Image (cartoon, rainbow, N blue to C red; front, side, top):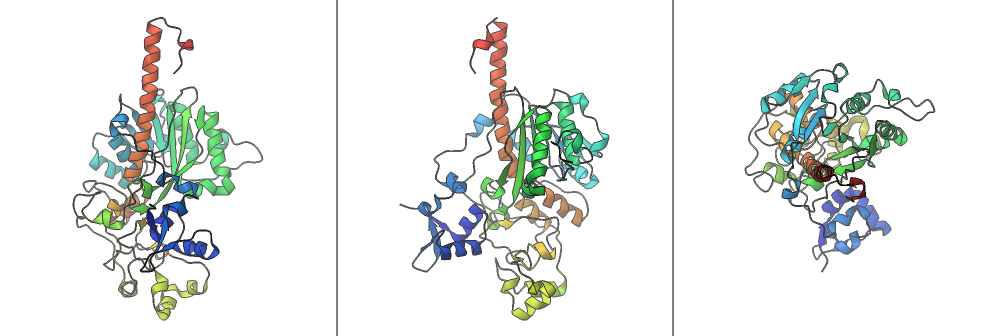
Length: 427
């Protein structure tokens, strides 16, 4: 018996718009099934043609949490730490943050308020040496800003990356020599400068002694995050270490705005009250006309012209403008401001942007995680963060990989103590 998937679910799974699915219906690429009420759904059989949806039909299960409990104290240095989304997720997975570096004073205060015991260095990374941590750290991680390199017709090397913040990330990796290095960034990095930027980064890390996995874009909605956010992960393993790493398996359930803001599986209570931005009077009047899940094209034509101005006559969907979220769908990717005209994130029922705590929940921060700074600065910190639940899933896989490495190393040491010929032992 086939399982049914809704139009919204399939659009989220494939990272395409509903309009694209309707177009595929017309050209025969993907035909939906019509229920008696003319509701459009897709059968599991019809979706098996897509490699990206294979996880829906695999019988693989997420490994038990006991298998990812750290066998020792795994230590991490995090660069460009922001408000702590990645560090908090790693902490939940059992990874200790030895050092967190961040230049923004408000983000540093956020980290200090929540984790007074963390070693937080507030400074420009260019001014900091990490040589004292050489061979003492398991993981170096960081969400470095994306900057292009100048190739000048040659293969990019470490020195050629100078002047970029990726160079500083790579410099720390060179100084510390961790077992694993992790760079995270926006999906756009994958195709930046026709792919040459990411190729250059891989080349640099390879030069520094790391085998680099093909970059992987992880969709947050597959990892218990009620948001259509995508993050690219660039992972390097120290050559000769024998460490094997696997990216986390997707979960089959997708969580929604309702799951984020109401009591349920993700949170045990409704979202607490908190401050939030407001719309100007006329903007609030206009957005009040937008239905749940709708956007500017759902407005009366005269209002569309008033609100869109010259953009009304331009091509393109501009689907983020005058956008009201739906309770029954994941939120669109949060930005640094919930009220920007190009990327509005209006509450499903109330005509207002999401509040600070609503923003934080959509990023899967716990309710007791406090943020420091002005309202605008807090939105910026939350909007730039790695979703905590996504970071946790990546962290669990890192712990699993390090556990396997630890077991192998301990066995090697025992064999050496017994004067065994370890070269003849297969691991």
